[in-house]
Every structure is written in C-alpha cells, then in structure tokens.
Length: 211
Image (cartoon, rainbow, N blue to C red; front, side, top):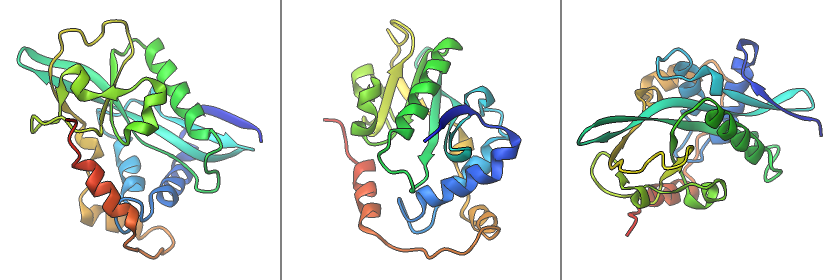
C-alpha cells in the first residue's frame, strides 16, 4: 500500500465526509452525526485548518483527523488548548496502523506549531500509547467538576500544564442539532440505522468516573 498523510484540501471534503459516515455509522448511536460535524466545523472560528489531515491509501482518502481550539477554565482565567476529533479510518482498513500514522503526524505538527496541550474524549486504551493520561492526573475535570476516565490530556511542551487546574471546555463546533444532521444526511445514500451493543458500551464508558 502507498500511504500518504497530508493536509485536507477542498477537493477532499465530500470524500472525507463519506468516510466519516461509514466509520461512525451505528457506532455510538443509531446512524451517525460525525460527517455533519466535519462539514460544519470547517467554517467555525475554532477550526484549525493547518491541523486538518487526511490519509491516502493508493491515492484515495481513507481517513482524517480534525482539530479545534479548546481550553481549560481555571479560577485565574482560561488556558488555551487544542482538541482532536473526529478522527477516523475507513472500515475497509481495520487495525492496519493508519490511525496511528494520522494521530502521530498531527501531534508532531501541533508541537511544531507551539501548542501547549491536547484535550480529547475517548477510550483511554486507544490514546495511552501516544502519551495521553486521564484528566484527573492533571487536575482537569469536565464542566460538572467530575473526573471521567474518558477525558484525556497530552501536554505538548515540557511543564505545559504545571499549575493549571480547572475544567475542560470543548468547542461548540463539535455540537450538532439532530434536525441539521438529518437534513445533511439526506444528501447521502440511505443506510439502515440499528441499535447495537457497542452503543450501550459507549454510554457506560462516557459515565465512568476516574476514582
């Protein structure tokens, strides 16, 4: 396979959205919203265009990663961070290292650009290999003040988060209204929405506290 990681270009937009839809369909809930999130975040002020990357396999886009501005709200004020997501690979290429290439490349670029830290939400075992740790270790909670296992933090510079304690606030660019998702999804081929066990597993994981 000839694999290339590069910045997303306008010509990639629809293909990237198609892959996102395939990757997330029925994963977290019946259907998916990530393809719409990708579509609308590109025009949001929090979108970081320089950190939007696609991965090509033999000349075809088969995955992507996107970053937005986020922050840690502390008693003293706001500390700027960045966050990635959605990140995805086509279901045609499971466990072939494509996601690792994409994430590693983007983290290195974020470091080069001088960003201080990355916040993300996900399964800890997915992101521990990149150096992410639970928010609790850094004194960073969710807005409700609780520490969840799914809030993950990666300092990009030495001592970047020393003395920073507060709660994570992600960009509203990641939010999607159901009506908007349905309207956007209507422009794609119809797919069956299913209730699957992985959806309940995700709900349980989202509520798991770091104790």
